[in-house]
Length: 91
Image (spheres, rainbow, N blue to C red):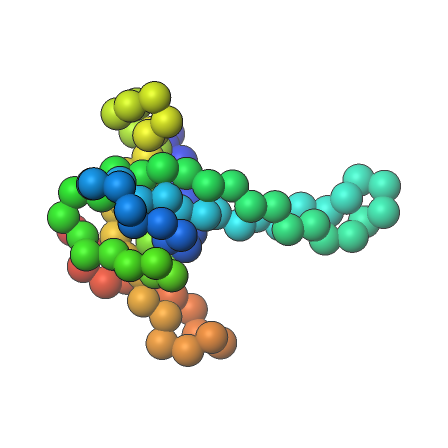
C-alpha cells in the first residue's frame, strides 16, 4: 500500500520537481503535549501548474532519483480556513 500525504509546496525552483512540506502532530510520551513535526519531500511534478503555498496530495512511488520518491497526484483548493479541502484537477 502506497503512502498518500497532504502537504504545502515550499519550493518550485527545480525542473519537474517540487518540495512539499508535510506536517504531522504527535503527543510527547512523557509530557502529553502536542508536538508539530515537519518533513520535506521532493515530489515529481510533470504537468500541474503549482506555486509556493499550494496544498497538494502526494503519493509514494518507486525512486525516480536519489531523493525523489513521491509524485504529485493533485492540487487541493481550500475555500476558507474553516472548511475542508476540496479536490481540483482530479485525474
